[in-house]
Image (cartoon, rainbow, N blue to C red; front, side, top):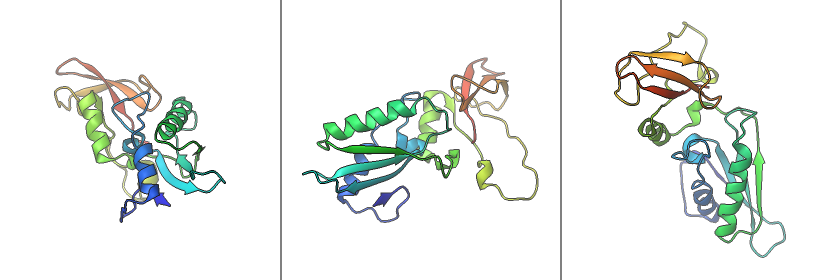
Length: 178
């Protein structure tokens, strides 16, 4: 079994399968792979009686009603079939719930380059009891100004908010901390 965050990364059949799954892009933000986004949770090779072992992929949606999950499942199946794996099982699990803490630093950098302000801070699931956290300003991905304003809590998708920069006047999406 190969699981996200494994410390040793031998080039096993499961690692090769992970690498195939990791090429699948998010259909809503095509510069991010599902690995960058942190929704790729597990890849296993399973014996289902075929000549080639079946691949079992586990993904977690960014939220339970995410409309991109069907497209991601189809893209995973297509990627594996193209690589010679005729049997692919994609499981969607809701627990533990996805959090922006699972996004890779590379993924956050890709968001910034794409013009979407990446999430900052830690999600509520990672917070500890104690002092109240202050809301920090969202940095404009165009000019890096902190002089920004939220226009609406929901942007082009439910996981993003729409902001505008008060300096360069450009609107931009902010990937919310979840």
